[in-house]
Image (cartoon, rainbow, N blue to C red):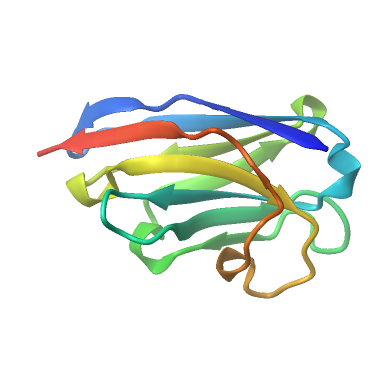
Length: 127
């Protein structure tokens, strides 16, 4: 099993920034990929950003079009932690953000459903 704990959510005004963190523990070598998903009320969950954390794809990053140029995903393998730096936030970024992890071999990991999930952290952007 892998446990994921998110932190860093909160409320900001449009144009502001937040940095989310996801700390992984447990049998982390069951995974090679970590990503961030979000779900707003009344909307479907969507993959926002992801990163391969080990292996031949290690370091490769993926973003949904709506956050490209504004969000950056990164990893600190020494801390088993993945970060999501979110800049120039918009009201439409308001959602519950979830960290997830899996073992993937996919060129489209944002469309896959990871095995392990965190509890989520709320991000609210006001106009």
